[in-house]
Image (cartoon, helix red, strand yellow):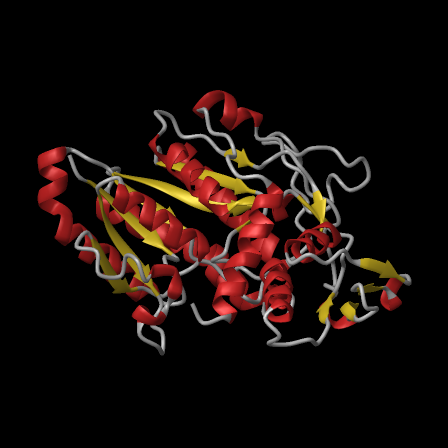
Length: 358
């Protein structure tokens, strides 16, 4: 029995892994993506699935309500026979977003339009088009908590207070409440996945983790010996593997009853820890010297490998995020499979191969 899924944000890290996973499990997937200026075949995240017979890619822009309505209507027309014959509910995974916390301080209005208003529009169009015949997953974020755990360094669960501190988190909080509203008022099977930080070799190059691993790879392959420039290296995060987290998304949406869940590893590491492991992968033990803006990481030959640059500090930063995912582990039997060190090593190795042109 083939199931139907809609995925937004397919070309990104989570979207590409999720789409692969759904196709492997015999789903027919409809992906809504923004118009882009380069052929999709050149996107390394989706090169393995771009020509899959069960994947249909169409244009959809969260800044254009008309394009959202057109995309959803197209999916309904293309699947009407499936829905009547099989009695399935369309599974909708909304992963599209303006996903850069730092950038949201520069473009707060645009961030809100995409991450908050876009979710309302999509949910309402789905409700009008499919009636109650769909399920909805919203990609939420641990940034909702802000600095709620900084003082006591406690773990954060579904019951913890939200204290969003960035335009990104504020918009995501609005989307979170919208999903709850449609679930409680309209009876929609709608859930929020409160995902803590998660990475992979497909992480965008403008995220700090990938910036680090690519910098290490460029150094290892003699592509670039300029120091990696970073901001707050003492920020601590609960880092998991995206390949584990997309399975949690699917578990949430296919569970019998809709519920919001935290997805996390229960381990916390600093950006500095991430740097140390990334260089360890290529046989270098970093030596840190100095304090504050003068702090640097040196290699064995006293070469400066990492420098602090104040331009990479955020106007308001979250210092500590550690998640408690015991609820989803207990109720849905999800658990993280990849370890932090293995994740970092995997990302560095992938970027070394990228630098070598493989």
